Image (tube, rainbow, N blue to C red; front, side, top):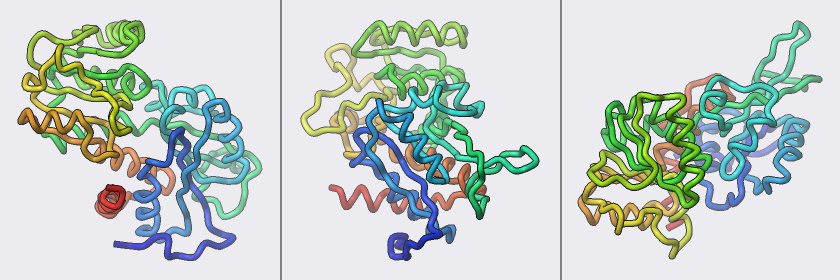
Length: 307
């Protein structure tokens, strides 16, 4: 594969980055640097651990230093919404920002992505997007062969990732959503939001009594060794699930996925979702089609090196 870091960094090199806390587990730099190299761009993609209390300052610093764009991961996606200068329809629809494109204002008033500028514009704005929701839906279709319309889904987690997932699944006309969250009140609030926006979707807080087409983990449980499963198998047996999807991609096989495969269920981790949200972000920054095959290979190699 292309070795992006073998290329020299110079004074003209441009930068993108991901902000999160924690961040050392992220495979985004491997994926995005491979994509940038394949496009022949003198750009690099970095990772920074940013405390949520410092997010506004970090965004301001990135803007001031002329970064092309950012990805935002846990715990910044909800916090960033009110920190953007403008929101794309995707960010407004799902109420979360995972991709930021910095844009400069031309003399005539039009805004252009910083990636198209050779100089430094005097006025720069942060444009927020959400590429997570569509990436999740695409990964479920491609990796599990799952049709979302009419599906019955058990969703674990009602935080930032869970809320975006629930709203996207509802918009795709899922028939029933079962919401389980450590803090029940948060699941109840999400259920009310779904019922207000998508009244045709049956939304239940708690575990289902019968089978479902999909169990989807949108919590962070499984990232660290020895963590408990996000699923209470005394309340729901995995043999009653058609498929299991875990948004976590590192480790490649979480305890939940091991249990799913032991139960004979179709199962997939979050690599496909990470790929598709990252590919869309790259396209927003560059205005060019993302080399997804190269980016996927870089992700797979990075995860193998980490095992």
